[in-house]
Image: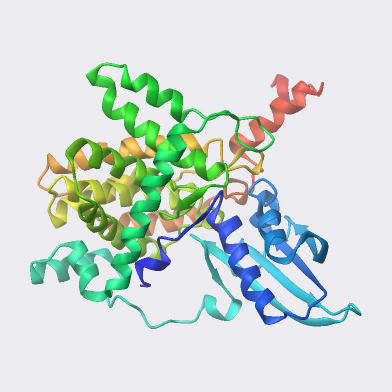
Length: 413
């Protein structure tokens, strides 16, 4: 497994796979051909199907310049290695091909070339499954975050400290922002309103209201192109901050405590990334929001004093109860259902952490087993439910728009 620095990335929204990844690939490719006169980028599969709503072309223009870039969209053609494929070409003044490269945006801002899709890099961590990690920790009497500490250097924990500060900043900025989010559907921000109403609500509403407000705040910042942290993706970036910010405010945890919680969550995120996928285009939203819920549940359970087994149980429940979750963003935007879905997953993460703390941590289906089911389920999902905006809620919205435009047949069924 890779360093946690490759899991938690600080950058601009709205999508780690459709915005961050293509931007990183463009920067890498542009640096190889500084004398090129023009560039061509062909986007395939999910990148092409939802790229405009996810601002993929805008991310590319920021690197190459609008006057030097031609973008081709191929939503009906996916490259075999991954649904998020893109081909970069550099051209001379005489329009001769100087060079080309295919990249895949595999989730969380990570990019791979075709050769790197099967290349086995030297891992930072020697264990592959959560069961192996848990046995290792039991045998040495250490926690999950101490396991991270034993394999990462001080720079990784400095990065986690910066990640926590970026998460807090996203919550606090999002709570003060109001207005309509950019995009075609005219979705208004809700976090400020939810936060204000919660402040005057009774005790019974405080936990749900505050977690919801914090998660909405970060997800709305992401949708507006603000700075967020992939945890593990931009589309699921509100879950972890929503839970952790609430616990710090409620229980007075130090920033050092939160860094340790991020390290614990990162262990689970890395296992998911290494053994299944965090890409909505590959396995649906169960790989994004489901993974984020599992990570947040693990972090919360640790902060509540959970044992190794209780933390694993919390993460298992967080992932298990998102199995089969589809990725069908309305009009290709990271807004509906993404923003509210982050808030729902954040409240669920703390709920399952509480459930685990109330148990002894024993359960029949392990985290690793749920993860294998998530991977199989994701691959069985039809493409229209894997970040293509062809089916599900996206289709319903298109039908409503057709009705508004005077088209009757699908709308009357």
